[in-house]
Structure formats: structure tokens, C-alpha cells
Length: 588
Ligand code: AMP
Image 1 (cartoon, rainbow, N blue to C red):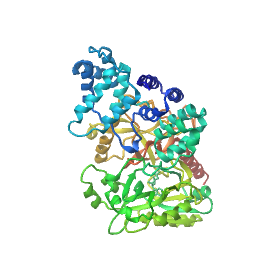
Image 2: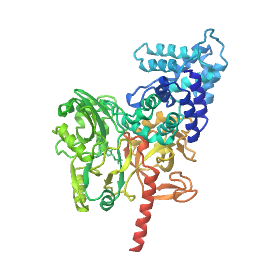
Image 3: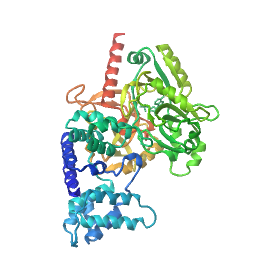
Image 4: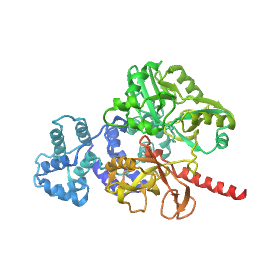
């Protein structure tokens, strides 16, 4: 397939931020794509080469790209840098530069998507001392044969600056329309995506095997499954109302969710946002295979830091000490953990997600042996408010955050938040009844002690319908000097030149970030707001919702994907809940 087709399509997509238009451009592109390149196209439009969980990074530095442009065009580096400074986008600058190209190549070859993809893949795989020269050779060989428009997109992909804001849902809408003629089939694609986390594979399946192939889509060991999530409830009575008269209550431990894929001694670990995290948990890799009584298995557990003397669970922040680049072995001895299993998704070559909670728990206990390091998460079948209250007390005393409540007869719903799992947390400090997990979308530079740091952050909820991040508040309190530094380190690489189209805000932030980080805040109240965009028009026309007196809790939720942040719906529920409490108080 000619790369020109993709470049023109990317150019069109870059010019819009309307989801429907974007979907239409994608449909047109998919319709022009031969079956054997469909997965490559699917990764490339998202600026990737493979699904995220494979961790393949292009890692090309700007300097190197500038040298490559210079080499293939004959234009001096200084001139390219000047052009780059003007537009702030090297991809764009390169197309301007190449229009003025002085060197002409006589045997210009057409470049194909396959060639670009294979070359980028080679670049990503290169390592070692000589790799810079090799990388440059590969890049300039592509640029030699590329038109200015093609060059601009090759560079954007290479540098990781292709930011079209195409969400997975939009890609799935387009695939459903292009290959089944009906957007409603998105749900079937969604299921396939939820159990594979690999959009390229989903695209290839629908293109080659149609809906039938998608319906037969199976879980594959070492391909992470998107986690099931829980709705929240505020009280025991609300839980009973939603769950009926008999359900499971489990401790809600405050650690890191880990998905374990195991076959013999081979172990792969995925975080909640499906990143590979083996490097932080060499103890899990070493010890857990001994506890498994199956040929192969996929399990979910919460890894929790513990006090080795008392066995008490310690908060999430303790565990985060393991997230460092060097001296992991030291952190492993200093911050011991236990692994607390709560689900089984696959066993001996067969999927377990269709089994009921009860059957899964039995299967889990049959195939995983407990010891000092590996535990089943404490669970009790509860039938009334008193039993929940009692178990909640035990859980809080053991150092956990509250309870997870799970329906006994329901399957595991990969990738979705639903009412089959509920979380009930104990938070006294917080008048809203729960903390919110919000997406960091913008920053304002600090003054005084905070000079050189972001003193205030602009935060957003997740709008599930629109797949966007509307602003809900600015937060400037609750930060320690240490957390400010840490946030700066994390956020600095996420600064983007242009506001990502999925960000909805009229504010003038000093910097915009790619929406990739979630932090936890508490607040005193939710109010109607003329400036913020969360739940806009939902309560009152022309107004959104905002948090009053928001405060950062100190928890940087690196383990959360932005799509797991608090949603508009949740904020609306909290808003209505507080209205009800005020109303009830007035009546008393
Ligand atoms: P939240 O982060 O507040 O949305 O709560 C969901 C998270 O709680 C999950 O992603 C897990 O990391 C964690 N968790 C702790 N205990 C459990 C449990 N028993 N079942 C499921 N998730 C749990």
C-alpha cells in the first residue's frame, strides 16, 4: 500500500477535532487498506508500532532526526533548526524544508506503508554503540524517497509527536463501519479488544475473518486482558440495594493491581494500565511459580507492601518506593510485599472469564497454593448491613481501604466498569464521601518556593460518551516539595505544543500536557461552574461542574489509565448525592 495514502489521510485527520469527522476519515482509510497491512495501519495511526504492552519504543531524538533531514536534503542543520523553532513541530518543519530540497535523487522509489513500517521497526530494535549511525542511515533512506508530506508524517511517528487524539473507541467505530457496515457492531469488537488489548489484532481479525472471527476471539496467554472495574457506593445500605441479599465482600487492599501470566517458570506481569512491570517485582517472578498447580494460568492480584513484623498492610505510597530505575534489589528487601490473589481469568488453556464469581474463586483456590508470600484476598459472603459493617471494620483494622463487593453469579467483564463489582471506601477526611481520580491536563508555573515547578495543575474528568477530558478544577494545595518535584519529573516529558483535541477547556494554561497521568484529589464540595467543562449542560444549561477547595492527597496514580479516571457520570452522582444530604439535613 502506498504510504502517500496514509500520509494524506493523517493530514486530513490532523485538521479536525470532531469525532464524527475523524471516524469518517478512518473509515475511508480502512476501506483503502489491503487486509495484510490493516494491523500496521491501525498501530501507525496511533503513533505506535505494536500494542502498548509490548513496550516497543521508537526513541529517536530530535537531534538525530535533524541530522537525517540535513543528510537527505543537503540543507544545513542550522537552517533546519531555524525552521523548527518557527513552527515548534519538526515534522512540519521538515516538509517546509524538503520543499526547498537542493539535492534531487534520480532513482526515487515509491514508498510503501510496509517499507516505512519495517524500517521504523528496525530502528526501534536497534541498540548499542553504533545504533545512532544506523538509525540515521535508515531515516535518511526513507526521507530520500519521501515527498514533503510523507516525510512530515514519518518524522512525527518517529519522534512520537503524531498526536491526532484518536481514541481506541473511535478506531473501533470506524472498523465496525468499514468491515460490517454497522457501527453497532462496535460492542463485539470491544469485547475482542478487552480480552486482547491489541487493536491491531482486532482490526486484522475483522478485516480477514469478519464478525464471525471476532465472536470467536480467544484469550491468549501473555496478552494482557483489560481489567474489570468497580462502581462506587457510599454506604452499606446502598450496597444492599444494588447487590441483593447475598454477595461476596473482599478486602480492598491499597496496593498495585497485578495481572500475572504464568506458564512453567515463565512469568509476565502487567500493571492495571497494562504496562510490563516484572522489573519492580523480581520476588514475584521467583516465588510465585511454585504456588501454581496448573500448566498455565492468568491471575489477578493486589501486590501490597507489608510490615514484616506485624503482617499489617501498608499504604500504596510504600509500594511506590519500588518504582525506581536502579537498585531495585535493595527496594525489594526494604519494602517487602505479599501477593493477594482475587481472580483467575484463564487456566490450563481455557478462558475463565465466563465463569461466575463463585466458580472463579473456587478455581483460584484449587490452582493456587497459599503461603507466607501468596495469599487469597480475605473474602466473606455477606447478607446484611451488619455483616458488611463488621467485615469492613476488620478490613480497616488490617490496614486496607475498605471493601470490594462482588456479585456471586456474574462473569468477569473485561475492560468495563459496571455494577457487578462495587467499592465501598472509608474516608473520613473527605466531605464528598470519596476521593476523585482526575487527569492532569494543564499546568501553571509556580511562584516563590515553587518557581521552576508547576505550582498549580489543571485537572479533568473522563467523559465516557465523548471520549474526552473536560476540565473540572485547578488544584494548588496538598503538594509537598517532594511531590512537586516528582510530578515535575513525570509531567515534563508530557508537555505538548498543541492542546490535545481530547482536552476540553477554555482555560489558558501555561503548558498543556498529553492526558496520560491520573492523580487523586479530595474536595469539600461540587458546585456548578461557568468555566469548567465537566458534565457540561448536564445539570444546568451553559454550566459545568467544578470541585470546591480541591486538595491533592499525595497519591500519584501511575498505575491508572486515564480512561479509568473519575467519569462525568460519577461526578454527577456525587453532586446529586450532596444535594440530597443537604435536603435531608434541612428536613431534620
Ligand atoms: P479504585 O482504584 O478506587 O477504582 O479501585 C479499584 C482498584 O482496587 C483495583 O484496580 C485494584 O487495584 C484494587 N483492589 C484492591 N482490592 C481489590 C479486590 N479485592 N478486588 C479487586 N480490586 C481490588
